[in-house]
Image (cartoon, rainbow, N blue to C red):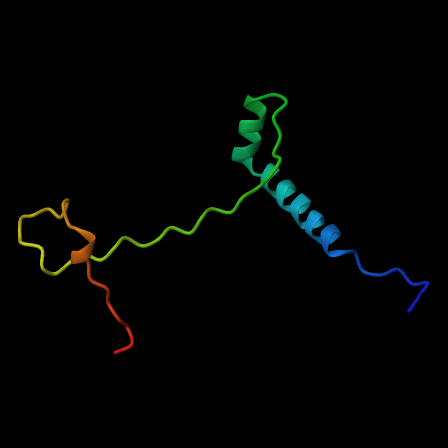
Length: 84
């Protein structure tokens, strides 16, 4: 259907606006401002979210005392099931 009313911004326009706002927020951070001041002409071109860090693997209960655990093979690792 045709309409004379303006529609909502496209998904691309919405994503671009969010990215522009994110960059603006990052550039207003005092630490980022100090870095940009230190490097004339530098600018923020993209902002990435940090990757989620995986928890460390569980250590086997079969490791002898005093072993330090440096040489534990993955086939000796245990997995805890919370659904018991």
